[in-house]
Image 1 (cartoon, one colour):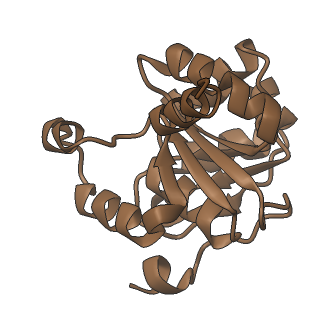
Image 2 (cartoon, rainbow, N blue to C red):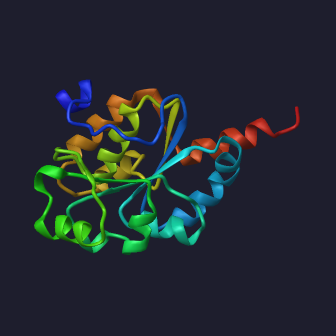
Length: 189
């Protein structure tokens, strides 16, 4: 309740997000297509980008600059050190259960992460980190969005995912909605 309703424990970022659009990008099999769908939005709006785990590596390969990387305790999903050191900020979530390996790895490469003491999945933590900074809009790319996604997803912490989406409410939209909106805006009358 304290995290979801009041933002307690969510680390403040140095990256300015207030009043700006933010895109939270998670690794997903269709991420390349989603990024293609967002190309016009990225070019026109210049949103801040928060990458979750290995999505940072894929964004780097696509030459999409991310400002913040949110990592979970599983070091197997981490991008290579040069991707992490090029980010303006790194958030380690869930900080409360961060493994010694994660902390040692980040220390070894000279990254001082901000800790998010929560049991939320890294994707959900990234959404809350963005939302706590008062952005104008949060676009989710590669996140679970449909009822089928939620029903098929058997990972622990799914209740936190539901509650996070409810907390963000109308501030959160899916990448596919951005493309649909851009297409509608450019359609001749």
